[in-house]
Image (cartoon, rainbow, N blue to C red; front, side):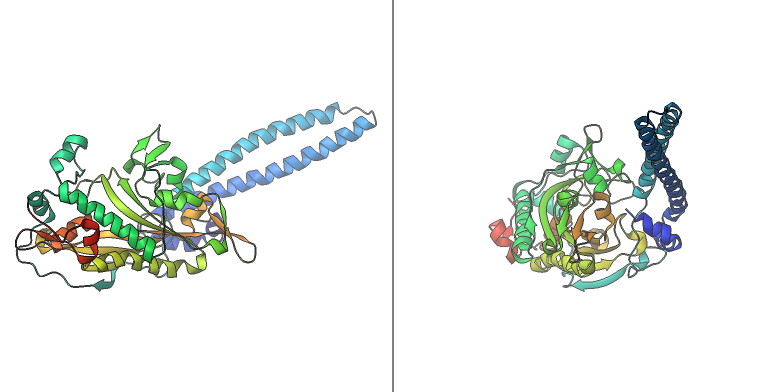
Length: 427
């Protein structure tokens, strides 16, 4: 959520930054300022009335002590009390309206984020490795069917379209990838592992900005007060909500494996073949809670942590610095990590397996996540997150990259201790 003081003091700046996103949200700033002015006027009048009531109450006490009549003043105090009750209700309604407006406005892009008119403005920050040289590369759907790695018919029978049922060596490979990534991030990258609930409260979803903007994409329970978590970002970032941390506690680095649930899978016009876009998928998440002064350096290191997974698996990838129009709702800056999928249609394509984002204080303001700095001042933290990494796209890219002429799939050396074999063979 944006700082209302920033909107008051620099409305043109806020509008200009929102314009670069291209969503028309800059038009909401006038409404925010109008409601804010009305709310502040109501609060000022409330303070005046409360001061007057206090003054008159003292006068009533003084008259009674002198045994003088006070009925007229008492009637005036009762009238002021009614005005205060009505004005308090009005001020509260305005405050709620202002908050709802602010919750619907996205974050401001950082000054370093590329601007443009379309996704061609995205910049390739770097790439790693080489595309595998494969002849007649099969896609993950054909490989999965041949080696019985997953069964989409079973998944459809159980849950409908847009779900996966990993089977046999496929289920084993999925488990191996998850354990490999968790060990890497905890042992080498210094993240603290958490195994959180998969169901989260509404206020937690608001805190990380999934709600109210994207409520239609979520799986809701208990009359929309509980939700199946769309990403472990929600649980991990909310661990310290409504707390004041010490600057000495920062940075906080959390990782978790969870399934993720999203209704958006299979939307019209999107590639829904195989296991690329589904309603439920597994993911290892990375979250950082940091001091503002270090957040952009922390974004670089978080992205490097996600990249390290692909490097150790020997998979070709690139890192894209997203332009303002492609930023997520709450992000100030994002790097997408895209792995090469050689068996995809048209001779291969890049698949996003991580979005590493700095939210600055956008989420922290929603959840009142603060820290006490070295001068004793309470300040909002900055929050960051990224996948480290997301399945099943990683799964698809891996089996396509390491498919062998014999029909088997080779398992990268770093993954072999977790999988227990060097290849997957046809049964």
